Length: 481
Image (cartoon, rainbow, N blue to C red):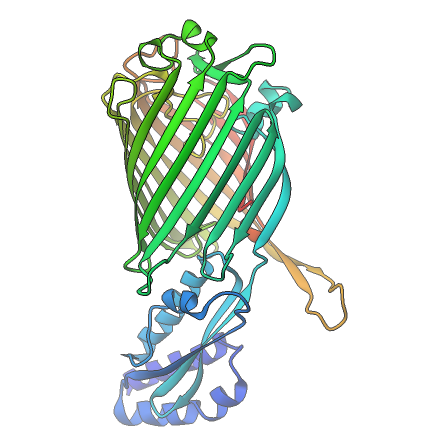
């Protein structure tokens, strides 16, 4: 009797939570029959007779079905089925194809159920002009480069998510300003009938008039010679992906790269490339593994993630690098609206003797320690640990009236989080020169605010302190664009 009451209460909870399902199917034809069945027979497996999808104007149904961890014809206890509903909703939201997802029991016939999946699609096409500083972060551009417009890229960027309704992405960029560049890529999650293999192909080329030719006292040193282009690069790649299960994705690929610098660069730094060369051309093989079990990938508050990569660049004296890197993250709720996060990164490069071009380690891209935004740490091995305690302060929506009568009003969601954080890390550099951050333990900490809004745009405002006795307010931005 206790088990019967337990599953009946769980079912009533499902009815309340999935309120978008038609009332006549749930209240009248579901509660009484299921109650009688459970009371009479105990825990009764629920048979999935159908899965109905609605709201997908562009997204192909098989893309949605691929993310749902149940299939027509399967049976589950009611408690397990409710967990599957939440898993399906989370997986579909993590595709970043939809604003909202509702997974619910639509109707029952005895112990048979029809599952309803209702989605609200995002806007997928973004042909937008862009204006972006070339420096590693906004603070370096604003403070150290005095917000110089000469260090800004501008042009036209095209992002076409879900281009054919198959969760594919077409990207193109034409850039002017600091870097003259052109790039185009196409990423399709599935290319086979079993929905396991995908394809990613791309090409990019560019040139600029300024080169970061060395690092001194853990700061990048640049050179510019009149209006000469000192750096020319071209890269093309082909990558196959394999996704047998929902949460794990493998990728293996091949690339070809070519880079040439001006005559001045090997004179200023003979170790920029090996043997004082000014041109390198090399093949690249790489393998990657990603695993996500998160409540929401763009801003996780619960779950685990792992990514690992092995890449081999070049097979000659001009370029010979094997790079292994691992990133892992975990998030745990400790109180309502409060979660603890842990991020780890580790990497190693073989052989240890590498040209300057291959020594970049911390401070580049999204691999950095908070509080050291004005610095870079070069080396061949190391990593960091980041810990944070975050609490959601506000969660609200701003209503935008519809432009036409009869249209549904839009809402801009805004969530604000407060946090405290701490970092520790280490980088090994066999040839540190006058750089003082490598070959020692590094520490930093601080407090901050995270702003999460429409289309997963995240702003981070952080007040950080490092072991050098320095502190400052730093701004970071992340978005789909």
